Length: 290
Image 1: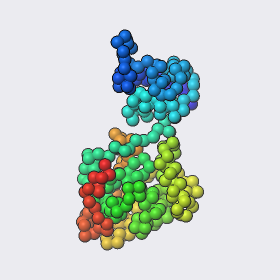
Image 2: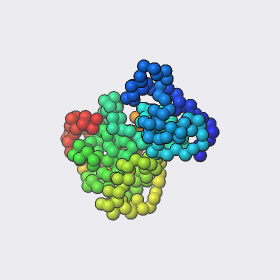
Image 3: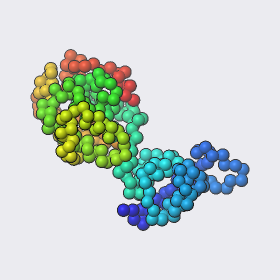
Image 4: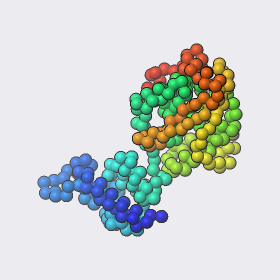
């Protein structure tokens, strides 16, 4: 429910943003007699595909219903950055349908961070759990993700459809079930993002185990999780996963493994050793993610 204060703040925000955009920034030739420094209401309405009357009501803080689709159009028309877009959606009580943009999120600095965490296996994922980057230790733990086609580099997809990943997990069912419960929670936070529905539909069609676990409707937030791996060369490895959010890149999360016991701690440095890897890591493959 949007209260009066939210409607007023949204109205003030839209007016301010409209005044900050020049006509030329949106492809409008201002003309010699124009006195308005920013955009006119009718110009924003036209760019957004809504009526002038409706947009005027929005700037007047009237109690009207605003859909996520209209907010998307306003965000494009007003050229909002991700933080501004989230702010507008939150004021309109539609924050659940904000789509996280990640196409250009990872950069060289984040890759350096991932690499610096060697020998702790570390990787980055986007909102729909696509694998964006990984370090040498992660490749040594799960096999080089570069062996997979781009669309297959997704943590949920790998757990349910990649035989090598499945063989590594000491308690596959418990680990897969826990991951899927977290994935469902993220799907709700990203309502309107077709990537979640597409991925779940594909896996539902090809994996009986995915169907069984998905139909249980378990939902869970991430908590510190201990995972055990049966590595083909190093034997049993026990690690505790830690998750961090990259705040400047909405939706991007970093996962890193901490050794859960002294035996695993002694083995981790070997993961980045080519002699202990299965699959191959190439710098060009990792760079290609970006």
